[in-house]
Length: 101
Image (tube, rainbow, N blue to C red):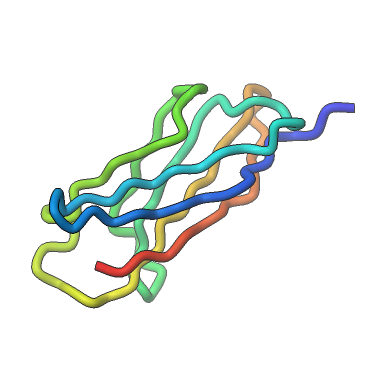
């Protein structure tokens, strides 16, 4: 019996030199493959600041320019949230990782 898609992990890594955020994720190998994804950046109050979405089955990385998004605000925690859908449009539970800018 096949299980619906399941996201295994999400990581958020800030590159202070490039002033960017790299969000990576992977899925549990024994589940239905990813078909599409959505990455959201949320502030500490859970307000969505940015959403990126695509139907790219092999994609497991999204790079965000933090200069335009967060500007001069520093030493603040944010959350990168990933949710994905499988090829049958089943949704995986969203997973997230926090990061400091």
